[in-house]
Image 1 (tube, rainbow, N blue to C red):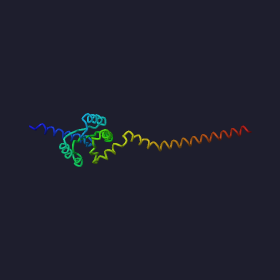
Image 2 (image 1 turned 180 degrees about the horizontal axis):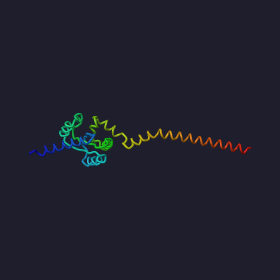
Image 3 (image 1 turned 90 degrees about the vertical axis):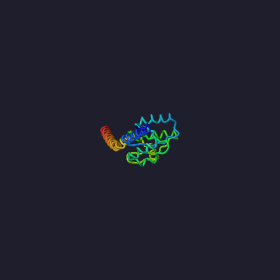
Image 4 (image 1 turned 180 degrees about the vertical axis):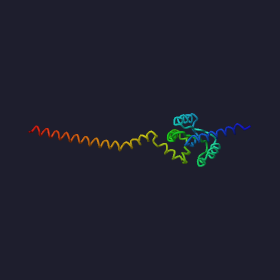
Length: 180
């Protein structure tokens, strides 16, 4: 019969591996000095961006990351660390983390992994400063719409000038007929 500690570590390792398979991105945060209620608030904020914070022993996290092929990120696991697994957009979760670090200087963004790239702290901050997906889509639509709008304006102005020209010709003929 296995000891309860070993069973807990195996369960935590399996949970990390499952979370890694279900997410395209994860972040490593150092939470030393952050109060428990603040961490609960962070977890709630992360849920709204479809992400979750998982705190586990470093040895378990290292073992799970190494066995899942994320050996490059293991160096960032030092001290009390947590793993933030992102299911959807990494920009939203990185914004939540970045905003939280502004209010709570104790939380440190150690690094992470996005698709095939290992992220450093500065990469996560840059990711957080990107506009949201909806804003980027709106900018794309406006960019695609600009040439069409410009063309319509040119045609509209050409028609307007044509109508003005026809009106001036009509007025000129009317004034000539009135003189005769």
